[in-house]
Length: 164
Image 1 (tube, one colour):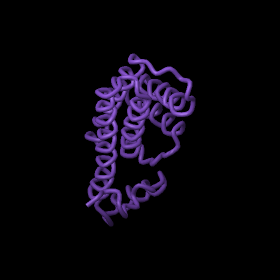
Image 2: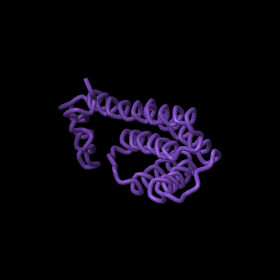
Image 3: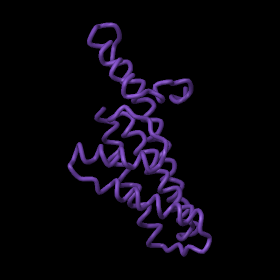
């Protein structure tokens, strides 16, 4: 079964999370069950991010300067960061710039270093440039860097999900 179908936990607000924690402390519900369902959602997103990275790498074989390499690499980062923010901050963020800001907050809170969020924001801008400006010159270096950055962010986000 697809973890995303019918799972209303993807729409949970921080206040609702607080209520679940309270109900767990009162013995009314088992927070471990809620966390397991949330982890299913996050793992689904991580798997989707891995698929985006796989597609980016496949594109390199056909054309190492294909603009879709930048696109798929960015969307790997996006879905991975969404998974990490979701489980670690109990926030489901879909807007790109807001997600990057929350990811930055998570990284700063955890490591006192937000470099990965800055990399992701630069990747977002590169993706926008490649997607919307047909005169953009796509280089092998840009594509290689996009894949390397996606791999780094995916690895970090997988760790956040595993640790939840």
